[in-house]
Length: 133
Image 1 (tube, rainbow, N blue to C red):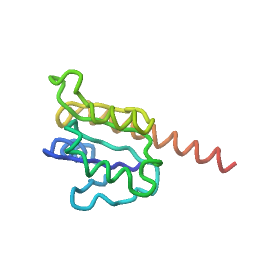
Image 2 (cartoon, helix red, strand yellow):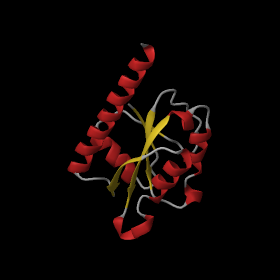
Image 3 (spheres, rainbow, N blue to C red):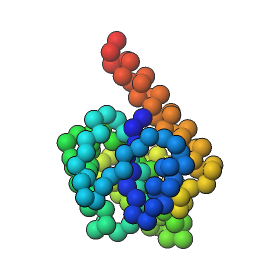
Image 4 (cartoon, rainbow, N blue to C red):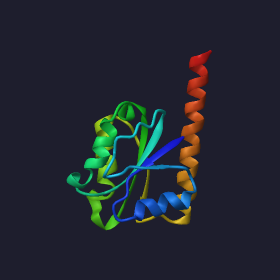
C-alpha cells in the first residue's frame, strides 16, 4: 500500500520514519505528484489555510480517486479538533479515517499503523484479483 504524508512541524514525518514504510512526502513547493495507485494519506491537524499543499495534492490528477483512507496525527488536548484535518478530508472524499495517533506516535501506534496498512494492502490485492477473474 502506498503512503503519502504531509508534515508541518516534523511530528508526522517522525511518525512515518518510525514505521519504516516507504512514503511520499507532500511538498509545499511542488504538491503536484500523482500517486498512480491506491494509497493512504497521513496528515497532521492544522488550520485549513495551512493545508493548501495537501488540497492541491488531492486535486492533482487521480489522487482523490485513489485515496483509500486517511490517518491523522494530533494532540488529544484539543478535544474536538483532535485529528480534525483527517476527519474533514475523509468526510469530503467519502473514505474512512483508518488510524489516529498523538504527536509522533508511540511504539504501539507504529506497530498498529503498520498492521492497518498491511490489512488494506491485502484487501486491495483480493479486490484486484476478484476483478481479474
